[in-house]
Length: 492
Ligand code: AMP
Ligand code: ZN
Image 1 (tube, rainbow, N blue to C red):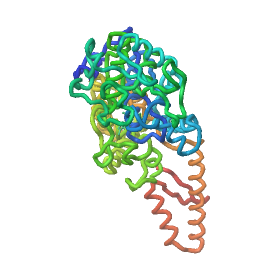
Image 2: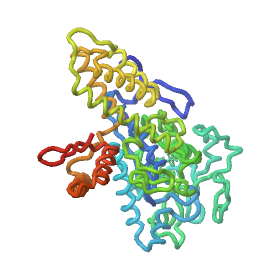
Image 3: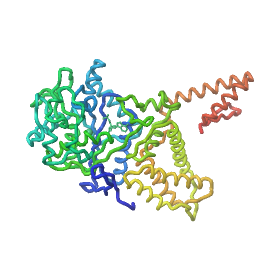
Image 4: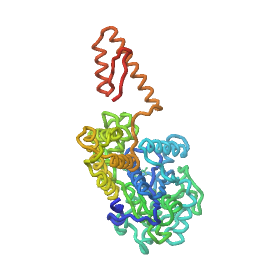
């Protein structure tokens, strides 16, 4: 490898050389989903971005402990300190237990992440499983005078904290101007100052999820879980903290304040933020209805696009943009990505059949490989990497056409590097139908049925129908072969 890994640190606003706290080990915490409904494609983009980062660090040889939580309590409506818990509300509307909601959408989330071929995190802790740890942090913050109790709820005292340390350094907000979640709702008058945020909330009768604490029967504030779980599994200082750009403020700012309030030092060396997926130019979000579910795009049953797109094509589309850029989802862009992805996979297939030449390679494989690493070392620049992969695709195709040649030793390096980058780093998997897939069996049956109909038409000399079937199948890349022993087909 020819260059050091650089990452863009949201805290400094600069690209910095990445140096882990412990040699060869990385601790990475990523804020996970709030499991009150199906993940939308925007959420998936953030998790795919951090999967790329996890995969690349692992590929570089780091032993990564990747912690991604499940938020199953404490995330209130409008990301505020008042209102109903998102999960409780859903449970109330459906007349089921909150944990049934949690179970349903955690399973959905894992299934979708699996379809996108993302790797599971090393630890996937839940907020409700770490109430004791959260209570301990609140006690410490009260002891350090950074938190106060009022009517059974506990709030973080932002002004008091700001006398000793700095609040707002991640999002660049000035405490004097800051009015946290500016809407002053009922009960927020409990707070000394509007920018204070909840660490513990006394449960109103409507709240189903509640735990005993020294202050009241209640539940933790949303920001606290990540401080508690990152500290428990990664320690008081760890390497990387990630999440979507929209979590920078207030969520991550509050996390920093909570951690500094107990340890007096910054908890994280590198803050990484993934940018948003937009649809029709607007942020994809559950609350506005401007969103599309992954399954709706996989099966084509949606109002936005005319055709379906596979998980790998969507992932390819996302990785063709840098994780810190906004990406807008459109049919044209997805179609272009589909073509590109097929071209990439075809070259991977073609390379298996290449015959090497004895003497020369018309492609500098070593410097090409270095360029691939340099692009990933430049803050995980996957679009640049994909560009380099296409240089290799072009070369492979010209070897197939006998215009260029490659020696067997270079072929080994090229093959290995392509596999590393395509499968291990970018995390693609061949999306040909598996023989065990029930859909594959069903398609086979449907195809045989079409052949039978065609045979019947031919027997009646209805060549209009039989030709129509042959031509239509050919358009779908299924070629029919009429032989003495009957008709067989080949899927191209
Ligand atoms: P939530 O389930 O709302 O807590 O969100 C889970 C993750 O998805 C967070 O890291 C969000 O920042 C991220 N996220 C939400 N909307 C989008 C979007 N439109 N594009 C990319 N990431 C998003
Ligand atoms: Zn978090």
